Image (cartoon, rainbow, N blue to C red; front, side, top):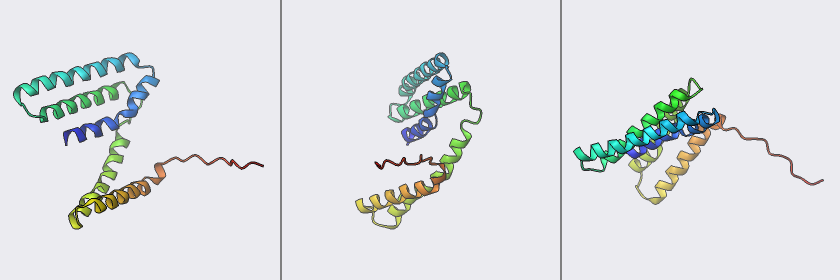
Length: 143
């Protein structure tokens, strides 16, 4: 669960790393990334000392990702960086009920799983259709 939350945090800042490099913020990006890695390593060591379970690894990764998120937000030139991403995450998170409800009301087997994932994919596609920018297809007929 913690690794999934860390992946969501990372996915929100994936383009921020490219933006930082395009804005010629190589040095601050390197410093923030190195500090986030050190914080992750130190928190793994400290939390493993007090709690010898795998949860300490997940918490440490989450702490490092949150620090990286805050650091990249600080050096970003875009002011409203996270608000549209959080809104997108919030609006689409309700669609995650599709696989859960299908497993709850129908048999929990492979066919139900595949059908619910296809339904989820189609729902995500149609809900976000306006956000998808498709370039027009060039006419490739020979004449």
